[in-house]
Image (cartoon, rainbow, N blue to C red; front, side, top):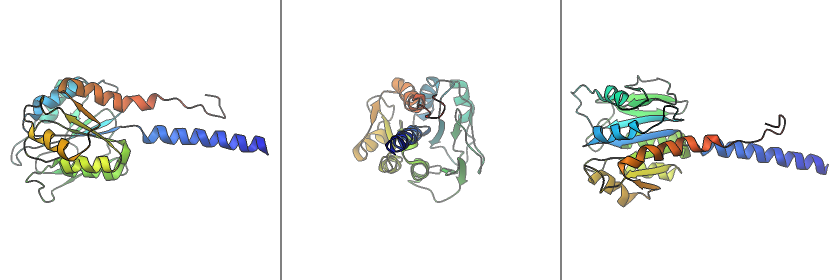
Length: 224
């Protein structure tokens, strides 16, 4: 009976380790940017690895009436393909999803994307807060939220939700940002896990996304 109890304990420990490994993987990255955002986003994605173990979602303030070439720009800047998603599309790792003009982008349970022409938030659609909240509620501690250069305060409330749901907060150093108000506001209202210069953002995100999945757990039945 003691041997059975010990075996059950060992198996339980393995299952707990597997659960911790899965839930500690930060494979949902949401990024908010405004003024100065194109240059900042290019700097970030250019430093990401091709095998990034995460899906990236970007909300950047753009006029509702203007065509956005941001997916094409980001695809040229780095190794990961970027697209404007379709509503209901299933997202995958290794791709960048950019909110199209005049639509909020939400990510829902089941790895699906929703585009929504709901009310403007902070006078913006797409709004950073909308994306961040949906990620926090749907994916909790798997989420890394990133605030880049920009004016006003969109993103601070959404980043607060990410922290509230045990995700990771990453804020561009305001002194390094072309427009400091958005990252500075986020710092005033949200405990930051990482405050980094633009040159360090890509490697920081790659480490958060790719680090935990390399933890190996022994299978009690196979020995692997």
